[in-house]
Length: 89
Length: 416
Image 1: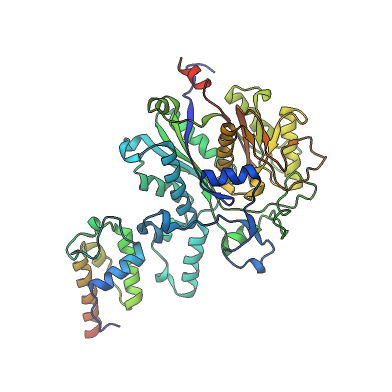
Image 2: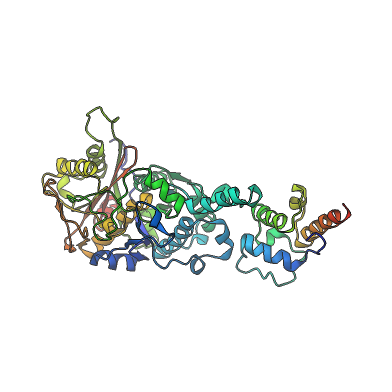
């Protein structure tokens, strides 16, 4: 799994499983740089999302990666950085 | 008593989720006509367990009532409680966003917490490992979770809390809500919803040794009957909107009635031979309401369906009201015992009975002649009801009693 690329579609699917979606938020819109808080996902929802990503892709995300990633783009980058690290190892 | 009379606290909204009816209208129509919601468990296969019957709420689909954002983080009991709260607020004509957030509080009761959610997470822990346990397990199982989720969803930041005293908790929570209103919070969401009909919840309940193992839905839970053999558990309850009577009147709210009196006691240590505490709880509630026994028009019994507990309850009622001195009913024979949810549902039934002029029946029982009770059996009984007494006992010796009263002249009397 660690050779794939983690995409926005992957993130959206896991977000929906982990935390559903706020009414009035269009996850299909241009959300890459919208902060998670504005999308209706607080820290616990992100903790759950991070846990699901780790389980599904067999990686470990630093706690900082989750708390520092305030937008989908930042979280996707953090996950793909882990993939790259796994490939290099 | 010295000083000014404490503020009158009234109920302005009801939200009901019961095994014999989802929503107030369905529940009351079923309860009036003696329709039972008790049947063989469908939530899981009960064939391997000694008790196989329960009162399950029919047709509750959480996704029809709640946003998807709440589904992954809530147990069934919380989903039902949130929906019932929505209905109660709508019934009261209250839009929380329009009210000051610190003027609204939440006090519910809980007997077991979210067992079904917890069971799922424990199964993941054992079979897949700790990283598979949901982050939401940190709160989704918790006794206080209904109060927490109700307050978050509705932006209620006033005094909140949870009471845990088994079935008595349903009354104790409403009493605590009344205290908070008397201290100055204008609206409190109260009542309780319990729901733990899942294998883990079931074995926990079986451990009490008080569950009926009968497989006949009409004869499994028969309090005050010679064949009383334990109780059938159920899920659900009721959410009540409590308000300061002045505030309710100022906004022109429809009022179901007043929370007029409350009393709570603990039974003496087993083996002491001292009288159980239920009679004292009734007397305290009547004194708090300022009512004589003769002014109570109906008693909603706790109805444990355990011979010893039935006798204790019958003796307490008879000691206060005299032999066959007051109509007694237990519509929970149609729902099973709902733990914390039972007494709020009985309070709701008491208000609906007042409105309708009808005492709902205790179904399917053949009253034992041993008890000198005027039980309303089989058919509803027409009655003018101005005041009702609701009783609830919790495992371990909790006794709680609450008097509710019609308000039309009474509250005006206080205001004048």
